[in-house]
Image (cartoon, rainbow, N blue to C red):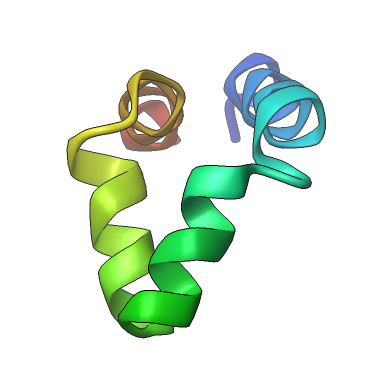
Length: 56
């Protein structure tokens, strides 16, 4: 397993995703699935996390 990619994902999640207002707003207005879709398709941090995840 690529531990460097996993560490990068954990770092990004801790620094940017916890307490993200956009994520919370999307969850309140839509659903958990719509918030997740927003994060992995439109958020620059989510896109980076997805790229790192593909390395795993």
